[in-house]
Length: 336
Ligand SMILES: NC(=O)c1ccc[n+]([C@@H]2O[C@H](COP(=O)([O-])OP(=O)(O)OC[C@H]3O[C@@H](n4cnc5c(N)ncnc54)[C@H](O)[C@@H]3O)[C@@H](O)[C@H]2O)c1
Ligand SMILES: O=C(O)C[C@H](O)C(=O)O
Image (cartoon, rainbow, N blue to C red):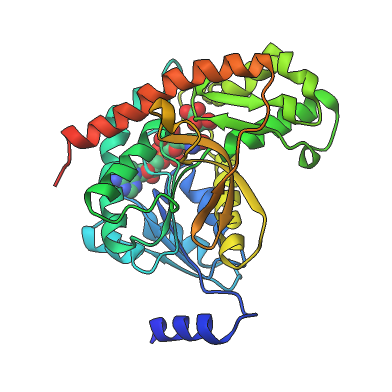
């Protein structure tokens, strides 16, 4: 019945909003809870599925009392609960995984988070292979390749549908510039490319409203290590959760708008990218035009100044290693 209604509405009502099921894996966590809250407030989300290894039904019961139209379901922490959470999903967000503590790099999370993402990727590939999947769990430079390798092994890989979420880097860059310049952050669009850790994060201020900022080493460093600022301030209680929830919700909303036919929706994201394949780097974050199928077009980098060329060089070396680590992990540990 539900499937019929869904198809009927897609086929016969061009003006009506499509039905969109969005599922959060890791929904009871520091990011998962506020992210689920923001998705519940989004009128483009009609069905919200929440899954976690602990606590998702409680979070769902709480959020379900919010008087917006969407339905909310919390699923049991069982294989069948996970499968049901994913069936019919249009978008899946994955903040499941451990966060950093002071003194750790994102790569230090690899040993724990690689297998979490691999196993959730299998469940996505088996239950909603057509869904757009947004990986938030760190280290994103390695977890997106892990997701992609799982999809390739299962014969369902479509590079247009898998995303590593780097939106927070762009959100931070625009906020930090606005603090410095006393401007409205909404008017400060800063392109950030590369990956999502330390020197792999490359802000392109030369393309912003303030090209001279590309020589402001302190600002560049703040964008590259903004995550560390939060980890230090939280003092052992985790990493960015609230700003990340906003960034993840923004990325999901952009995909929903593009799915609903809006043209020219552009978000930065870490995707299977042609930009540096000639250097053996299959994934790269840059501005991506979104469409109904996910990635419509990976936009070119544009012109970089000499400072940015140096940053890019440092980025590519580290990024290549991070990607290779993710690919090698799945080859050596295919799991069940
Ligand atoms: N991409 C980014 O910009 C960005 C920003 C901030 C944080 N992160 C990353 O996001 C991840 C989550 O951070 P957090 O602060 O929400 O952590 P958290 O510990 O508060 O929450 C993680 C949640 O994942 C759940 N979980 C663990 N294994 C699971 C599994 N197999 N299936 C389903 N759920 C599972 C846990 O029960 C927990 O509720 C971390 O890896 C962190 O580094 C990424
Ligand atoms: O810094 C972290 O570990 C979390 C996240 O990747 C961030 O950028 O805030």
